[in-house]
Length: 145
Image (cartoon, rainbow, N blue to C red; front, side, top):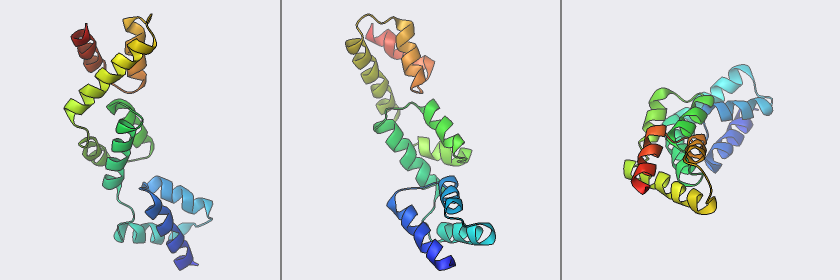
């Protein structure tokens, strides 16, 4: 049964990047417990199907570029997945600072265009809910004015 579950787990990990928490939860759903679960996890790490640093980089890249999330929201979600602080820092390195500021600028312009009668406080609140830092939001708004 071990090899069947290991192959199933390899396919699950090969489909897209996964973190240890996701794989562990999936194995439990498949009713894999105890030593067998731990052996499968170890084999996946050993064969490089699971790599938390690689996962963090892929997660950060996707959430920033596709979902347009800020660093604070990304960090919060990685911590909920029990990703180490080291891997979180490594993941955040994929975001270029100029690209990050350009994204805030893009979101400010888009939001102002969509909601013409929006106050600065509402705009700041919206961007902070997307995970961007107050100081950077303020700087972009001041530069736009």
